Image (cartoon, rainbow, N blue to C red):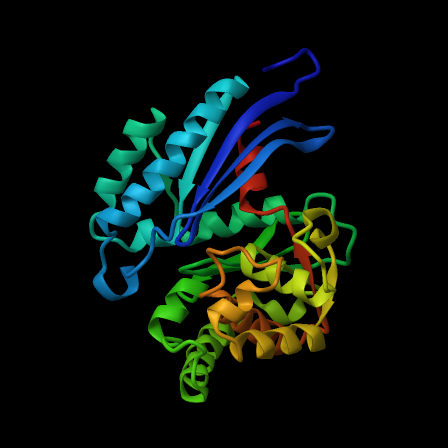
Length: 309
């Protein structure tokens, strides 16, 4: 609903390799993004894409079911504008056209299969607005199939997307439950090479503040904080030390998915891939030279919402 005070109600959907998320928000220049509803479904759209190069019919159907529910929420909210972006899995898949047709049939508008560079810029915009920390910022968005690296202060100076993500690294390397030392070493080598290349490309060494986005980061933060349940308000902009990131990562990699699920902060759809996500975060912290990372619940969804104003 649009009012005379220039508040605009928008719907933003982010469809990644692991999850599909919805944000309905009231957005204005003065107050930024005010949530009406924020939801997340683990659909594992990118399951098997690293191996087969295609989206499976089952993964597309899981995503369709989630989007059908979101379509109802959007209609009831009376939004002025809506935008859906699709990221790593749908960029990589040979049959992306099947996915795009499903989205159009379900939502009534087409998804935008954005580049890694655009994904990075939207994530940066969502993460740093109103952040009281010292720039330049290095913003890292650890997804299921890719991780975005962005450096900037008020705007983006450099950005790069690399094909390391919690689902991709789990499927490629961490196949045992729990993973073996040899599997972890192989994942570390793969991730380290990609992280070093990304940090060099964006000049990550000049950043003064590291900001981490998405479920792997916020789950590591919740575990480091010892929360009795997942609490976005306590996680948002919490500063987690490098030592605590390393400790949580080692603990996660030493457990089975079932053991990880015993912790109440763990989303059931993340338990099997969180070890790889935490490992990516640990290596980014180490290789960037940061002594801590700020976890942010504001991310690409907020950037999409801001883009609609």
